[in-house]
Length: 279
Image (cartoon, rainbow, N blue to C red; front, side, top):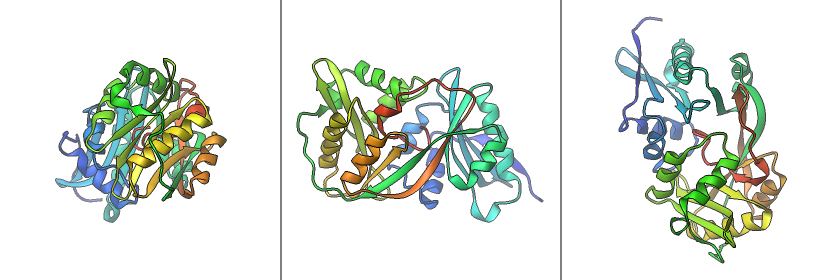
């Protein structure tokens, strides 16, 4: 291959390039995703340039000293098969250092990821559709609830602490969060956000199916009449049932894979994945 390949971090105002490329791949990112992602690890978004022109992107976001998440691994279509992506992949994993790394990859790439030390944990299935109208019910605005409750609940379904990301996610323009209290306990909560097409619910976290149903209906009400996208971990049968009960249909799936052992999470409480790009 001729040409000079350089790799550098994307600036905060450049992360939108990776998000735009993800949209072109059909991943339907949220409208405010770029700003939220940049709050986690400013050095974790990398760009490969060929003779000064954008050629490939990857993100390897370090959440703490033990865990990172890989996403936005995209090579410009006209430059694929030329080794650019492999160089960028190596640079991304170098940024993770010795951390355990997670990713949500398309099944077609699962074998390639396995060659790089990633093992399949489970599948996530994307559901989409236009459910019947919901209602706020007994839920409250997440902004009115103690952040400590949200952070503690998130810690049960994600392998690393991510307070900075959560604060950005909850306060981003267009993001609406609802929570269900039972006494002083946060029984369920979630966020719905505008995407390139429709609105995406994620995360959706609940201690049982009834709480998940209440929060889902509240988020559906907040979304108006827009189509809804919900990314469901396959090992949670109650989450699959919720999606189907509301008329959502599967549109594609990802393979959640990990390189190294990660902290166990309560998948039975996870009804909707936050983001395929950052977990």
